[in-house]
Amino acid sequence: MSATDSAEATPQRILAAARTLFATGGYRATSMQAIADRVGITKAALYYHFASKDEILHRLTLPLLDELEGALSEAESHGDPEAVRWRAIEGYVDVHLRHRDTLTMLVKDMTLLVQAPVADRFRAAIALANDLVAGPERGLEHRVRASQVVAGLADPVVLFRDVPADRLKQLILDGARALLGSGALPPPTRGRARGRSGGRPAALTEEQAAQARRMYASGHGVEEIARSFDVSRATIYRCLKNEI
Image 1 (cartoon, rainbow, N blue to C red):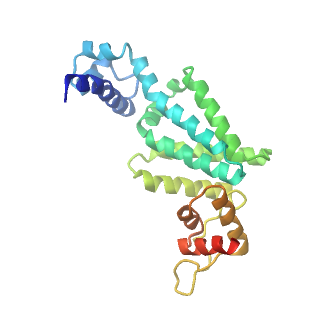
Image 2: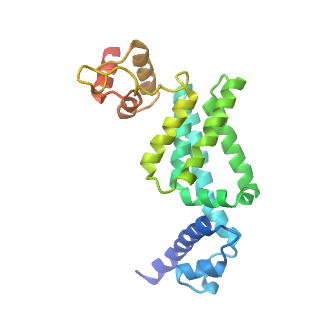
C-alpha cells in the first residue's frame, strides 16, 4: 500500500473504530484517545483527520440518513399503494440492517437523536414512512397501524444484533404483515391447505392471483411474489402467463 493509499484509508479506519466503540460503550463514554488507540495512531493524528468527536458522529450518521431518505423516496415513486407500502417497509429495514452499529449507537444514547439537524431529518423520515405505510386513505385506523409497524421495524435490529441480517429481516417483515393484515399485504399462507403431496399449494385462488399480478406489475420479482404466497415460482409464472 502506498503512502497516499494509507492516508486515504486512515479516515475510514477511524470511522470504523469509532462506530464500534460508540455502539458498545456509548458515544459520550468514548474518548478521542480510545478511538486513536483502537486505530493504532496518535491522538494528534486523529485530530488531523477529524477536528472533534462531533464531526465523527456526523460522518457516521449521514450515510444512514441519506440512504433512508433515498429508500423512502424510491418507494414513493411507485404508483400502486401496495407496492409503495411494501417497498417503504423493506427499504426501511434494509437501511437499518446495513447500519446496525450506527443505529445501536444512537439508541444507546438517545440524547444524540435530539441534536439538530440529525433529529429533524429522522423525524421527517419517520413521518414519511408512516404516510407511505398508511396509504392514501390515511384514516386514523390506517395511520395508527402504520405508526405501529414503522416503530417496530428498527427496534429488532438493535435488540437482536447477533441474528444474521437475512434471517432477522424475514422475521421483521413477517411481523409487519401480521400487523397490517390481509388488507395491506398478501397474508401469510402457512396455515393454508397444501397440495396433494403435502408441499406447497399447486395453485392460487382468483383473489390471490389478482394480487400476484398487481405485485408483478408494480415491480415485485417472481421469487418475491412466490415467497409471499408460499408457492413455487412455476405457479406464479403460470398465473402471469394466463393473464397474458
